[in-house]
Image (cartoon, rainbow, N blue to C red; front, side, top):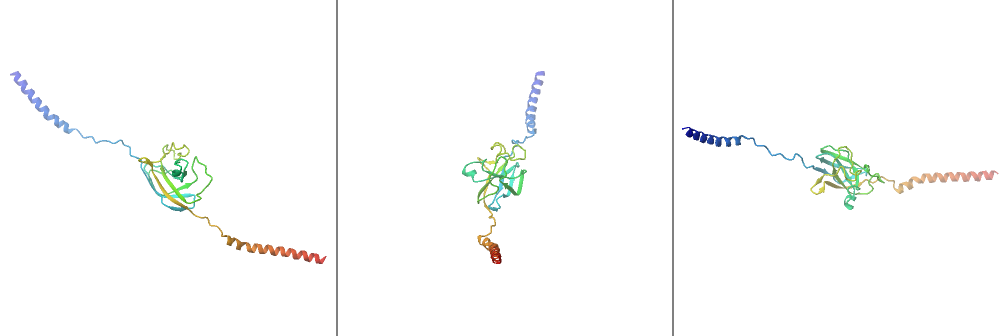
Length: 207
């Protein structure tokens, strides 16, 4: 009798166990998959053809996902593949997010010396987005020979935008205008010389 009861209890225990197990499994919360928490840095710029006085250029808009700088490179970037030596201008530190009408001063870059203070000829310039990788609010890319504050990249290339920049001509006085302006001076000089000669003649006659 006792063995029969034990067998019945064992069967009931197995039945209850198999019924409870799926319910317990179903009651466990589903954990959402987590990413690595790091977003790929991104940058966009709009840099259009423009006419300037040669000391600055302006970008229509800049959007840097992690903030940083916009550096302006001359033709050496493509002609000589010189990323560091081609930098001729850099913006102020830009915070993360969009910016409008970003003006960049030329020929004032830490780590470089220039023998000119403005563009001399028309040509193509390239804007390149850079990080502030050391977080010191200064553009150290040139000073560090490219090891700090490197550029934003997309795929295997840097993020850049190019534009043709024309330099305003300085107003000069035409040669004809200069000639006309000299006429009164020359005439006055001739009058003075003539008066001196006449005075000398009069003095000699009186003697």
